[in-house]
Length: 547
Image (cartoon, rainbow, N blue to C red):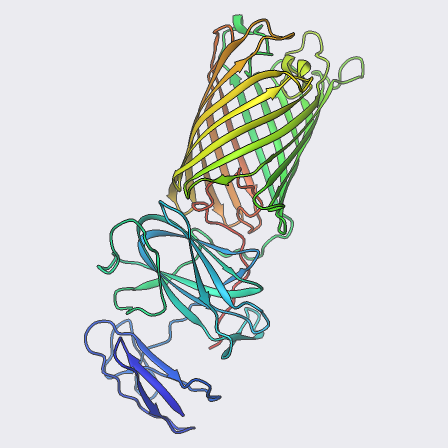
């Protein structure tokens, strides 16, 4: 039986071993950490059992066998990720470092390669490909002790020389494949250049003495005992309050976006369906404006992605009923409102870090008749919605991903009046969004916005004027366990209306997301703009190697 042996980067040596006998092959280790390879000749139908034995004990590395030998025990990685073409595995890695990938496929899978997409801290994503083995096979066992047949394992080293967060997405080209990933745990070796990550290298072989590795799951992921097929359930409690003086309470709401002082409790069910990707979001809501009866209703939203190229379609619906302090209105005809919005946008990449986003949308509303003596509730009725029950919106946005965790945005939008022929106003927006990882389980976000709006004089507005809106906000999320996330947020929104009146207001919110082990799989990219730091994702139950 021909066997090939190689130590480190030395030339491989071939030897013949007699079947059904125990043969000792002396290997000179030398100094430092060495990489040993023992390979059967290609095409041979034989199987070989290999045991590595040292001539002296090494604490922490060898164990004593019954025959007195000092054996180097095999390193057992007892977890493997399941990478699908439609559901890749996402890793978050802090560079500079090196990542070792090990991949194999079930013999029943048509997968032939792992597609590797690496997004460095600065610059465009880079593509690599790890070809899977097809001929040889090995037998493993599932967690319930079922025998499973797989191809042999293929390995590669992914060198990430840049400092900062890298996002690695691993997907089978078709079907499914299994993989493990290991990352460096010490300082980077001299072989990794300390400069911009050009290029990210993918090596079929490299000496491992400079690469002590550990098993790497996606950041913060703890294997869920069971993954829920029902989607994600969310609960939110928020409070909004205006700090304007009582003398300003009669400001025309057509020019003011100030929310009334109110509490709102809402629930939501989210579900992501692959395919052309579809995100669903349904749920009830109850809000209680201070000095007014509660408003009850619900919202529904759908987001379609990958329908035609990068086209994204959004649909939103809402329906709400107003009540007085003792229930429905006294005349038993409660005020109600309904609102529908549809929009489409198509991101155009101008460079690896800059995108242009044209948008077109429309809305139609049925505002409630404002009850006498009742504080206006923007979700039920406002002077602006009464005068603008429908309209079109067109706009253009510019997005610069200065860093992967910091985004700069600029937008300009035009809104029509109800006749669809004349302009009601022009809106602008400048913004920054940033994300800061506090720990694998905690994330802090920040945002700044400035929104000027040029409002034109018409039948419902006396004069043309400019309004200014600002917002400063922060948010945080904590994973309490693999299936439960706590979120909190605070925002300060000062507003300067057409009359020059300054209206400060603030918003507070707190909520829970029960994911059932699905992570952020059911949240839209808008709700989770930084998935590379929010590493918790859906992944399948792991497999265990057979002894």
